[in-house]
Image (cartoon, rainbow, N blue to C red; front, side):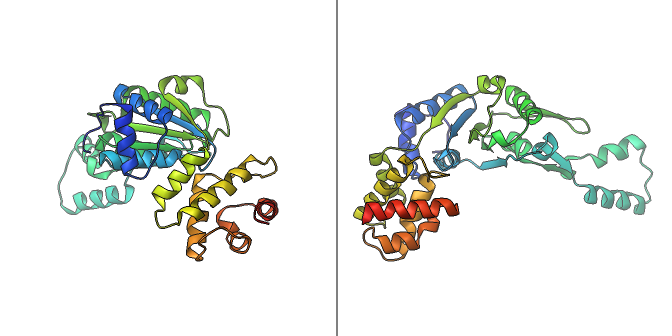
Length: 293
């Protein structure tokens, strides 16, 4: 696909499925509406449920560049927007001096803040390159000030650079924001977006995801892995319930170890693909012993 228009939510789901991303009806519908209404899409959910992968799938489905802004504590507008290439500007000054010209101060300043010296960060790059998919990943890690700045940009799809002028997107980029909900986002930002909570998939859908993404994994092994992961998620004593990403990693690891089906020995040996905490490793091994014993 080369256009961001889709006839229906089901058509979008089919396009995403071609990339290997299986969106349920609710997610496909809200994504279709976000595209049709040119509104940002805010995806919340536990880590590993496919929020980032959704943005990647949209970019692949429409043949658009994916521009990612990874948020973190302390990120500010400058790190998301632009910077000036000071080294290149200094070299330009020396070149002017060596040339023996005598430009006016205004002319010299204008030449210093030319577009060739502008270093575009993700948000500015998305505005310049749109149509594109702008992924603002883990927005909940940023602070209130950055959230307010982001709201302003998403309201107008333009930014003003004092030395350069206003950069406005000819076509609004497709914006996908993700949040692990480590903190609540402000209502103003949420109102700007269409919202969807991505939960862990049910048994049948997760098996379908594994079979689609990892067709080389035997069907029996895929189903056994998913059943085990679903049981692990259902327990209350794991620090981090495994997401779909971990399910895929574990199924791939078991297949690489040559396991045609799930057994305790290879399951325990490959547990690092599923669990990321020492405490969870011990608890999950005990759970697997009960399941496979």
